[in-house]
Each structure stands twice: as structure tokens, then as C-alpha cells.
Length: 386
Image (tube, rainbow, N blue to C red):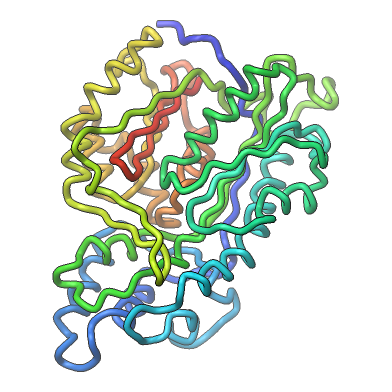
């Protein structure tokens, strides 16, 4: 069945990770140091943390809090989180965000521009995405200053929408391209999730917070999108990768009923606190397929017409739930599981990392790509890509 016409083209993708990284075993030590009390009294809690860290499917994570050339044991490599009742204040955490978010975003955006073969001076709109920090002037202004974007570039920010926010950003970028077919849009997502590690003095009863601590990491990703009237800088010189990466065909969103407390993201005195309840995968199993049928039907498609499923790796349980809901073979989401193991959950940039990996292996003739993310609400966001 034919796909709907594209509203814009994704020309290039760029990604960036902090140079410093730490393996999951070491981060489990960090959690033990910022959780149960020392000595025999806290030993059951530390064992619980170690078990949960092994189960989340992450092997290593890149963190801005780790010096890339640091040596020694894990506590010396992540000195930001000292033993105590709650950890650094929100102000202290945001100060680190302001220091590190913009340089990481600039690296990803520069890579996307190179990949697309687009000069920074041609960008007409900049869409930024982040939910792990606030600063103004911030990432949007840094992109202009450091990359040489036009000072007249339009700026739009998508904030505090969680793991699916890059898909919201794609919707915004596509709307800008539809409004102005000559538009050249730079979408940049950056998250420093490690800044919001929450202390867990009672991990035996707070497993959801331990899992959230175990999953999230830092990273940035960017995409260059163009409208229908885009003309390459040099029509005779092909871009570094291909004429286009994906075609944006449409988007969808749904707020699932009676799931408001299943996943939350709130600002506290000691950072931003994420809660993940067991109800999240069960809600996905119950509701995702019916909504997907309805949404795809708007484009004259069914689930069988989808060639590639790009599901945000929010965690093993979420991926298992998506496999069950969409009646997929388990291996269909292996790229998502592999990405989770390699870098952890980066929140909003993660789906762009996944699309970057999938473009090398997907079979265009097999059908469109459906990218899916989940966020607080509980909400589902999806993009249809050709």
C-alpha cells in the first residue's frame, strides 16, 4: 500500500556522547553509596540495588560527571554525589547542566550539518529539545554563536516532555517546513539525565526509583530537515551519506486514560524526580495496539504495512510490552535493546540515536518506519517515516 506524501525530508543525523563513561557495575556502587545506610543494616538494600542494575539491560553509560581520563574507584570518578541524605541541590545540578549541555548539543548539531551537507548559514529555524535542565540564554543561543547559524534564525523550544520529546520536535519541524517549503530546520535534543540521580535510602520499597537511576544517561542528537523547495548547496556534489535519510510522513499522539501516576517527572529540591510504576508496561500492552490501528488507519496503513519499528528503549519491560502489544517477533526490537545496552536511556535524544542506527540496515521496500516514544502522562508519541 502506498504511503502518504512527505511533508519534509530528514537530510542528516548527528549524535554526541560525553567522553567520560562508566560501566553499570560501577554505577551500582554509586547507588549503594547514595542509598542504604552503611554497614550490615544497609546490606539487603545494596544487594537489591545490584540486582536491579543488572536487570535493566544497560552495560555502560556516558556521563558528564565522569572525567574522561579519571582513574581510581568509582566514588573518586563521580565526586558530585557524596554520601548524605538527599544529594546536591537542584541549583547545584542545574549549574552543571548550564556548563555541559550546550557544548554537547553543539557537537551533535555540527555532526548533523556535516551529514546533511548543509551549510550552517542556511538554517532558517532551530528547534531545541530538553527536559533535564533550564538556562537562558541556553542551548538555542549557543548553537547560533558556536555554529554560525544566522542571528535571525527562528527559535522554538520543546521542554519537559520526557523520552518522546524529540518526536514532538519532529512534529514542530515538519510544521515549519509545511508552512515554508524553503525552510531548513535544525532539530537538536540534549539531556543530562545523570544530574538527577536520586538518593534511595530504602531501595527495598523504592524499586522504581532505583530502576530510573539505573537506566538514564547523557547524550545529544540532532537532525537537519528541509522543506519541499530545498535546493542543495551544490546540486552537482552529493551530500556525504545520501540525498535524504528519511521522509517525514506524519505524526500522532495519545494520552492514555487513567495512567497519570504511572510515569511522572517533577522538580524537587534535590533535582528532578522520575517515577516509573509497574503500570507502565501493562498500560502499553493494553492500549498501544488499538491506538496504533486507529492512527495508522488515517494514512491508509495497517500494522502489517510497517517495515521497521523504532521503539524508544525506555527499559526491558517497556520493550517487552511493545513486542506483546504489536505482536512482533522478539528480535524485531533488537536494535532498541542493543542501543540500551550500549549507552543507556538518554531520554529525548535516544530515538534519534536509534533512527541513526536503523538507516544503515532498514529495507526501504519493506514499508515505512514507525518511531514510538513514551512519556509522563502516560503519553505515546509516534512518527511515520518513509
